[in-house]
Length: 459
Image: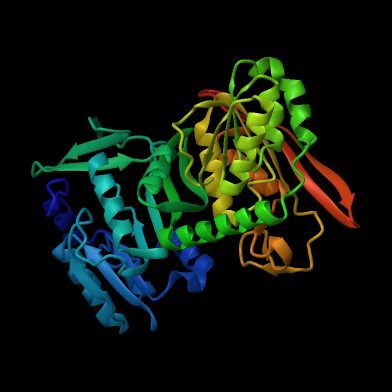
């Protein structure tokens, strides 16, 4: 067992009946109801305690497993299971070192448990929870927020990151609590191949103007890296074929690009500009001619070869690379401006979240982000296969575009992505044109990355 966990303290709490009579956690029940069949039969409850949450979930068709540090907690759970005629596997163990194989569970839940450690312990616990979770599996977490006031018996503790408290028991044991902020939760997700599902929720209890209690309720999904690699490989092949056989119109920049640089050229003078999804260069070349230090990335080597030839012909220079919008090969806060013109629409919703996060990451504080993507009010093509997803996502099914995925954005989705990535919307509008009888509508959006301390707003 870990030295971070005061076993006698927790044994004594359960011996005194701690947790008896408590109903299942309401936010956990909401998670179960929301995700339904996604949850799968094999569920691990990390820190199952006296069975408050595990026993109600141990219904026919589910293979519940509870991991608990204390013998008394396990005994309480066994008794409840017996009384209700239910079954579950109960294991005594430490959440820093789970005794289960890789990918053993469809879903992992942990309610008010993984906060009982220091930051190093938190990192170990997250790594273990992710290890035993299968690809695409869900992880529901409820932990204490750093917004909560300290209890009288708690004192701040030195820790390698963030805010932690300690209390010393009558028996001399040290009880640790790590109080989480959202940045920490996002970093833990990124380090452990998890993506955040929906909007994290910090649920606060305020008494006499003081935040007496704060609890994060957050759902993660484990990324399927193998599937993502196969999808990206297929996308590269499709775009190479498109640029080789039926290249899109790339002679003039999109109208929103000259408008943007005319408005912001003084602010951006001397800055580094990154074109995310630069294709064969219609927008990058325009900005390069204005004298900006240009960078570009695209998934298609054929498109990049065409761009390099154009740069040579025009006696221009730019740093252009082949790569993925989900994993940009640049350090944090490098660019004064990011532009992505009709590129980030080639995603499902998960891809949109990841690519927006990457765009925000490489943008300097106070930097500008010009975005053009398809609007959900645009006419839908008949030759498509709809994809089960958040909002409007589909795959084109004919011609050179066959196999290309598209997501049509609502304003609410754009605002959600902005909020998640510290982006303030400076300007947003729909641009409509008719082409061959089809109503084509794009969002044109300018964001500014919020500097530390900058008030939110806009949009």
